[in-house]
Structure formats: C-alpha cells, structure tokens
Image (cartoon, rainbow, N blue to C red; front, side):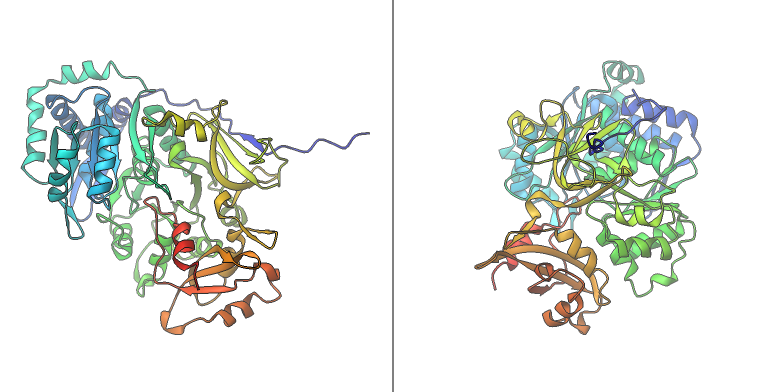
Length: 540
C-alpha cells in the first residue's frame, strides 16, 4: 500500500455569515440608525465627543462640502494628518461620495509628499497644520507648483476647514443621495502607500468591499458589540488604524477612542483607564513601552478584555505580560499586510496561551491561505516552511498606476504572494518564521532570525531585540543581535549574551555580534526596518 497523502498547507476560512455587500457609507448609515445615542468617537486631547447620530451628521455635512468643491467620483482626496477626529470624518465622507482617500504618512517631508501627490493624482489635500516642529502649511506651499493636479489644500482647525464644512449648504441631501446611488462596493475607496524598504512606496488600492469586510471580520473575531470602546493609539494612516480599528468599530456600533495625536505610552494607558476602554491596540513595541512605564502598575485597566497586537511578529514573552498584567485575557494576534486589507490570519478569543503566543492564528472567514515552495510554487505539506500566499475578497485591486508591479505579487490565480516565510501547522494555525529576504545563511545553514529573537526575549535584561545577518568573510553571513535594554545602565556584553545562549541554541545560531540601541528604525506600519540594521551595523 502507498503511504497516506500528507495534508497540504492550504486552508479556507468557511463561515455561515455572508460577506457584506455594502459600501462603507451605507454600512455607516445602518450603524447610525441602530445605535444613534451610543458614542461613536471620542477625542481625549480635545475632549470632543460624538454619538453615532452626531457622527453621521458630521460625516454627511463634510461629504456635501466636498461635493460642493467639485470632488467627483474617483477623484483622489489626500489626508496628511496625525490622529484626530477630522481624519475619521474624512475617511467616511470621502467614502460616501465615491472619492478615493489617499493616506499620507505624517512623517513625510516635501520630497516624499510630492511623490505621493503626483503618483496618485490628488486633487484636494486635507492636512494638519503641523507635527513635531514641522510646518505642514509651508511644506504644502513648497510642493504645490510641482503637483499640477492639486487644486485645493485644506488645513484642519483653520479657516479653510471651516469653509469646506460650510460649503455643505450649497448641496442638498438629495444631491448627495444621487451620488451614493452611483457607487458600488467594488469601487476603489482608499490608496495606502506601502512602506517599501527600497525605492519609492507603492500605492495599494483598496475597495469598499476589501476594507469594510476585513474590518467587520476582525471585529467579529474579537467579539465587538455596541458595548465596546476601543483605544486606538496606532496611526489612522495605516490599515491598523482605519480598518482594524475604525471600520471594525463602526460596523459593530463600538466607540473609537483617540488617546493622542501620535503614540504616547502614558496617554494611551490614561485614555484606556479614564474612558473605560474594553479593547486596546498596538504593535509590540507600543505594548513594551507601556509595560515598561515606571508607574505602569498605577493605571486601572480593569475594563480591558481584548485588543489586537499586530504590525510585526509578537514576542511570546510580551504577549504573556499583556494577558497577565493588562487584563487582556482575550487579546488577539493578527497577521496581514496592506495589500490584503490587511488581515488574513487571526487568533480567536478562546485560544489557549500557546496558540496566542506561538502562532498568528488561523485563516479568517472567506479567505484562503497556502504555503508554497518559493522556487517551484508548489503547495507544501503542513509543517514545512515556505512562502505564505493569500486569496479572497481582501486582496487589493492593485498598485495604483503600476500594473507591472501588481503582477509581480498577485499571480494569475489572484493569489497575493506575501514574501513572508510561514508554517501552517496540522491544527490550521499559522506561524510566521521570517521574511524570505531576512533568512540568514551562515556556512550553508539556514537560520531563522525569529527563532533567535524569541529565545533572547527571555533574557532578564533585554526589553526588545532584532536579529539580522551581516556579511562575514568566511561564513558568508554571521548573526548580529541588536538589543534594547530594560535598564541601559545595567549593560550587556557579547560574552554575557553568548553565555546565555550556550548549550541552549545550536552553535551556528549564537550571535557573534552585538549592538546596544535606544530604538529601532521603523516603517510606517510598525515593522522594524531590518535592512537599515543590516546596512547600519554590518561593518565592524
């Protein structure tokens, strides 16, 4: 008899609840009708609050204002702003009129801003006035001559914003309804520029169907209802904020709580405490910063029950502390990428600690995943590492204006090739073991940086760690550990680190180089830029 066939690394998320066929505007109207008196949005810094009825009215007024300014279906409206209520209003107002909102990283400078405005063809730019000493008005003035399609700039909190809202009086609700009747859930609604490690970023173009459904299913998986209040310190300009937070909330009647314009650990915990939040979001470095506050134990986080940790691999030790010390017993790990709206895999509320700390969950409903041999494209047996691919409603429409680059990552079968190395276990749970480009090859041995990082997180003096391969004359590559210490004054030597690894890691995995850092270079989505660590510290 032949041996039994091995189960393949393929999983399809089935479900009895169908996908939503709404546009984002129609879905919001349904929420307003269902929960008019529930709070929809709270801005802690300014003290402003909106019920769903008030939020719906504010969105409609802004949508009519944009119509009055001549914004047509398919026009690109840029949003270059820190986290603030106006950002959220723009998100839903542009969706209601069929415009495509272009997310622009608040950290961009003139050169990057010019590229995004020109590449996407933004006609109206809505902007903060400034951030961390940068005058956005001056930056916009400088780039406008180089952006021929940009016809109007609006600054939040200034006369131009007030004038945009006031322009609503020139457009009737009937005219807005007529525009909405022209819209399809498959229309593009958002362009997000991916944080590429080389060259200019690419604009992932996402539809109503892409992001509304993904936000809805992320919210379903953590059990959101109109009783939930979600603290959102992650940036709105990325999918984590605008999809996994905003759309997850509004599709369930939950409340969006903005703790600060940009991440501040103390402000985040204070908002979670004072607003009695039930959920808290963050990338691992955010949770690490919160847990390491000297007065962390003084915050009352008793109302928290869940939250999402995503954006980069989540260290098991950090997750255990979040569960034990932040009262987040139902915290969820999510895995995804901008091009997939973003989430493909997510842990469940009742998963045990091993699955919650050792995996990125299982496939969400209505999505397919598979793990393939990166060279042959053949689906591998479960348990074998290969490239993770995903398919379904969540896969982007494409990179804006770049069909060739789209074809490089979305194949003829509509599978999105993530570039991540993953293992699909026998139980259907996925593990991300690294990036294809991050794999260290030392003397012919393939080394997963993630494995070494997880081990080093258990060191009593290490708060955060990233492992990269750097050139070595004899072995091709050697292992560099870049470390942030819990107490910089305590110090850590390479000999001490190697002694910690002795007899516990294979000799070729033990770091031969060590760098002590204050912080890691990050992408806009919260991922560590390992390419910068390799380039910056590859030389002795």
